[in-house]
Length: 177
Image (cartoon, rainbow, N blue to C red; front, side, top):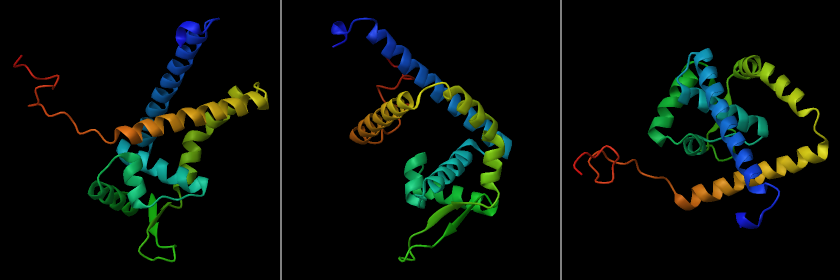
């Protein structure tokens, strides 16, 4: 397919994907800095961000869904939620008619702290996007949505991958060969 693309389309696609990978790396670094700023482990801060983002979208998470989102076992997620709740960063509520269902909410101060940390960047990103016409932003929004759906489908098809054992013959650390 790439052989038929003229005018540098393949190269442009590569540059675009590289730019998205770099942006993802910057987001990961920003998340690590947010964790340090809050005095949390990066996994705990990631959980706080996931809970706050889901709540902001109007689709709050359950502990099971959070466990999936941050790739932790249910036991590890429970321990994480216990820490975050004890520190006042999150609350667990039972707002569903089925009282067994637990809903995760950000603590009273967490949105303020997130706004304080991420607010300056949000203003810079708004300024960076301001010159682009609405139609182009709509197209890019659809493009990013399509990329996310493609990645979600790929991850769902592949399923979770077990870590490679150091004793495995395929392990990069195997020195018996």
